Each structure stands twice: as C-alpha cells, then as structure tokens.
Image (cartoon, rainbow, N blue to C red):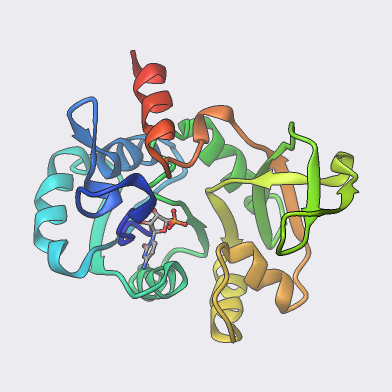
Length: 218
Ligand code: C5P
C-alpha cells in the first residue's frame, strides 16, 4: 500500500495518508478495509520516510488480526514506493495487490474481486468504472482538437492485482514513472484484465473528495 505521498493537492497539512477523515487517518481507514478482505494475509505499507515508527504504532491495533502488517519507508515517487513495498512482501505470497492509501473507503469486496480474478488465472487485474463525462482533447491554448469516444474509456482504480512474478518483472523493466502498476505490466506485454470498480473506492486527492468521503461515512 503506497502511502508516502505528500498530498499537495489536498492543501497544507502533512502527508495525505495521515490526514484525518472523521477523526482517523486515511491510512487507518484504508488498512482496516483491506485487512477485512479474507484473501489478504499480509499488508506492506510504504510510509513517509520520517513517519515509519508513527505509522507502525498507528496500525498495530488494527492489524493484530489474521493479516500481519509491515511498514517500510516509501520513495520519492509512487512507483518507487511500490517497488520498496514489493521488496518487503514475504516470499510465501505469490499474489500481490497494490492499493493506494488515498482510496481509503474501498470496500473489502472489491479487494476480494481483484484477488479472485488473479487466482482465476489473470496475471494483472484492475478495477474500472465507465467514464461519465464527455472527454475532449485540447491543445496548449485550450482549443478543442477533438472529442474522444468515451464508450471505450474506463477510469482506473486500485487495488490492482498481479501474479507476484508479473509485478516484479514489470517494476524491474520500468524506465519512466507511471501512475499505476498495470501501466508497467502493459509495457512488458502482459494482458490486463478488468473487473467492475466501486464508486466508494474514489481517490481522495482534493478537498472536495475529502468532503465526499466524510459524507459517505456519515
Ligand atoms: O499522488 P497520488 O494521489 O497519485 O498518490 C497515490 C498514492 O501513492 C497515495 O496513496 C500516495 O500516498 C502514494 N505515494 C507514495 N509515494 C510517493 C507518492 C505517492 O506512496 N512518493
């Protein structure tokens, strides 16, 4: 679980994963839901490097159940944080899901859906939602260049699930920074399977998203 981002788009207030939602850090909400998915046997969190011991203390009470937790220092980019966390996943696990702490309200059922699609034989699996807005391409001056057919477009969420060897190879082969792990798998020619995403798995990026998340919990 990459959780080392600074959350600049959320405004001032420290690392995003540690911002409060109904009195608890986003990371706590996210880990609690992932830990509730029966398939999950271990959660590795990439924390802000100066907050590793704070995050360990924060997560100890909610991960004393069946799913163990490991906290490592994250990197300068999301991709680096995922690679550092992946290196700390115990060797006994051959399926790995990558999940943004920022998607704090992701239902455990979505985690299960992704895990079970990987167990079913797909090397890479992503949850997606249809795109509801009309999408235009524009040039640097803002002039419209064209309208994109949205029927074939999907908005991508996490958790993204992988056979461990696929994810490891995808990260080894990475030459530039990607905003998702399935993008790295595509680059090495792996077929990526989609499953239905969940509205509640929204990514909390801007203050408006935090307000929506507060409402969802109320
Ligand atoms: O910045 P963005 O919202 O795309 O980040 C997605 C996820 O990646 C967040 O959970 C964030 O904490 C994490 N991240 C990270 N290390 C970074 C940057 C982002 O773990 N250097």
